[in-house]
Image (cartoon, rainbow, N blue to C red):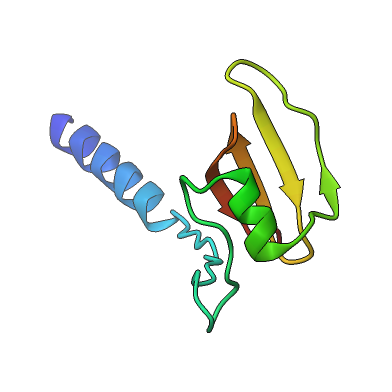
Length: 92
């Protein structure tokens, strides 16, 4: 009786494991280079971004504390903390 119960439980767990799915998430990365999309790097100032990339299409007002500002360009978005770049991303 015990052997049948143990065997049944083992088969139940084995069958559950065999039904598991593997999910893959596509990655999307574009190099920050002339081969990819050149965009601002962390730590440069707002004035340096404007000088190198021109005026942004859209500038959002600073939000929160510390103040975070978002500038939108045709190929990327830049996030600033105070007046320094903290991140630049390429929207999908």
